[in-house]
Length: 82
Image (cartoon, rainbow, N blue to C red; front, side):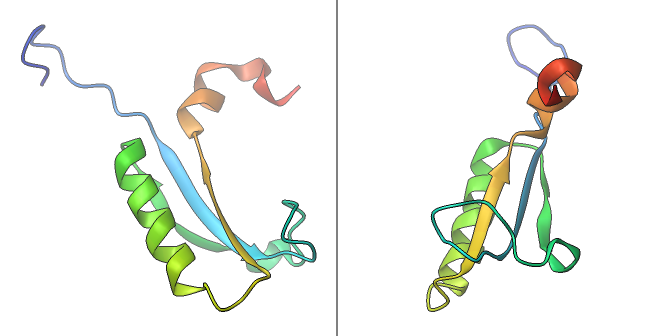
């Protein structure tokens, strides 16, 4: 609960996933069926920590890329995908 308003804290969901890309400058994943889902996290800080950990674990593979997606933005704005 938030201390100032006694309202439950709003969790802003974040997704961290990764996979191989043909070109490390893009987000064009080579094999979308084999993406590695790191997890869904309730805060940006937790998601960023997970992203860093996953990225560091694959630092020797230049074609492995992990991304952090702000799911809460997509859930709040249904027009986001259009």
